[in-house]
Length: 324
Image (cartoon, rainbow, N blue to C red; front, top):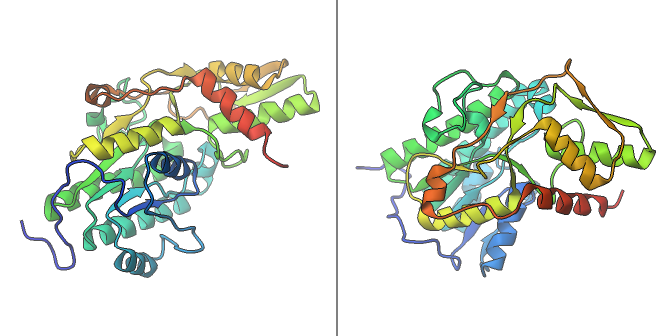
């Protein structure tokens, strides 16, 4: 198999060398910061990190220059434009364009510069809106996507396929992980752009502070979602960098889900809000259910360790301690 001009073939390592140069793209985000914490706890001392002001991953020339100069051995691609239903639905062009640019520039530059292994982080929204539950990896591209986040999903699907194409044509060792809904310290709590769990934490917290008698949540409350603490995801990333080398994407989740109404009750309890919880059926629900089949990951010996009740309490404690 002959590589195209500019791509270097590097044979796959056994294991993940923590002493090598590891580039964590998106290190200031929810996922990237958790991965950095996990790697530092493992003794990694040659981490490469750049803020967006230092390295704009949407700028192809800047990405090429960074890889040529820094020569990372491993890349964990956690950088992405992310947001909840409102942000996805109102900014489809930005979600599609920026995610395509980021992953295209990083994956290609990594291949060109001899990176030993790249980990691409996708999302459970890549699966069809009405996929059989729990969603297996082979349900990808078997049906229509959820309209409220299809632009982000299409970009992430393209990233998976790019990793597979570069593996096939250039023997580039790229793996793709599909995490479920994530939450944790450092999340985005902005009510207009955040995901459901942090948005609810802020809403219930502010309602408690104001002394409100009720809180209204989006939709009917019936959709079911699975939630994974970001520190568990970081642990899974390191685990799979050590042990997984296949072209097929692999799901990362807990294998359990709850309804949005049940989630609201858990968050209200953790926050200490004692008022009424109302639903607003005029607002979109999104996908009816999103539960990942984590059988392949479990078979490798990994399972999540942080329970949802514990995780919500810890995240609320972190949020409440933030200034402002």
